[in-house]
Length: 301
Image (cartoon, rainbow, N blue to C red):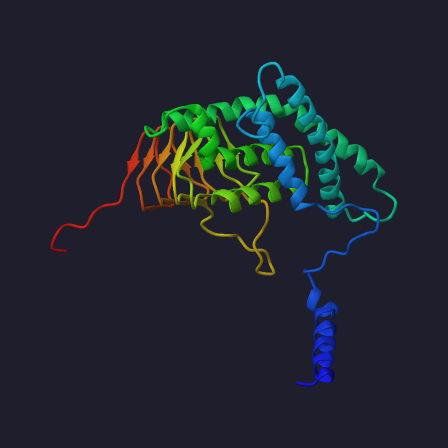
């Protein structure tokens, strides 16, 4: 090919890729002066949050009881600044009035939301401490809490989830989903930030677990790898599109155990103390303290 042919190909590609008809629903028009969410900054937010919640395991390795207040103080100050910026970016991204000189109220709202998350960090730590305890008590191979915090993917995923869930609860758009998807990429555990999960929750191994947006999970629940808590069907509107906002995922009551690769679908309830065996589908509610296992085929059949 000659250079003129290369130029024609490049020009044609640019024209086609810039065509508004091909960009419908795929193009976010950035408004000058408004921030955009940053994956790199959100990674720093998670790093800081983990260092604050689990000091000595993440962040500064030389932290001790004499310097802990200093290090946590620096981390909290940095975290609040970055949170405010990213929450504002999420608000601007979702706001129809962004770029029209009307984002001053959003700045105050972003600051208030950031401060609310900071104020909730002690409670988030308390809940995560129960998750660490549950993981330790549920795994005979674990030697101490430090091993759980440092190595187990469930703690990384739950730290992201519990921060993201709190941000979702206070009304922060977009950012919570990005944070849980970061954990999904890191650990293979996919938890929607809108899901509700009680204390002493753990996932053994973790890879391939999916927890949908409208799931409600009680206390002392344990899942194994490959478990799906999903939707069975999607009611459609008059245009044939799924209706948003309908509760469509399972409810797991307290003290439920779900073994590996089980699939639980629909707005059903798995009663407290129940056990769901491996490699089965559950689409109907289970009474409290019941058990459901895959029936093995008889030999010769």
